[in-house]
Image 1: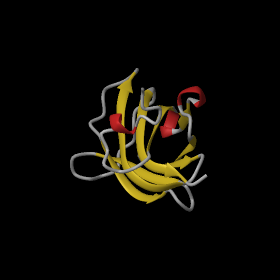
Image 2 (image 1 turned 180 degrees about the vertical axis):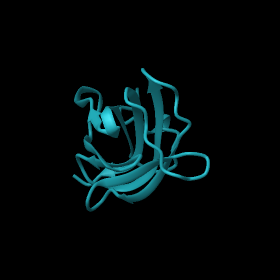
Image 3 (image 1 turned 30 degrees about the vertical axis):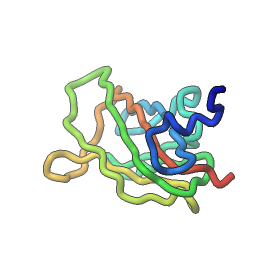
Image 4 (image 1 turned 120 degrees about the vertical axis):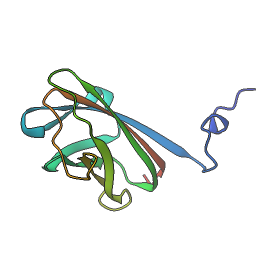
Length: 127
């Protein structure tokens, strides 16, 4: 009989991991637009400064494991940027603040037309 909970396939020692995916398009002056149909569980993404963004989740979670992002460039020259997680509060405010930085650690703006594919790894919703 099949395991209907599918825990054995998560490759986690933690119980009840949750994976959220999102797609965010970067517009003029770094303004983000969330693709709602491809971003279930992500309520919003707001630009808070040069290369800095706040991701707000739809639900609170008990713990945060990892955030990964890949960039797809549709226009302009590529920007060599690394994603840095600044603060995490997935229980209270349901927010994760991130920044894109260059090799020296300075904040940099993503090009207009960049599409971010975000993957969040969390632990069980408290809802």
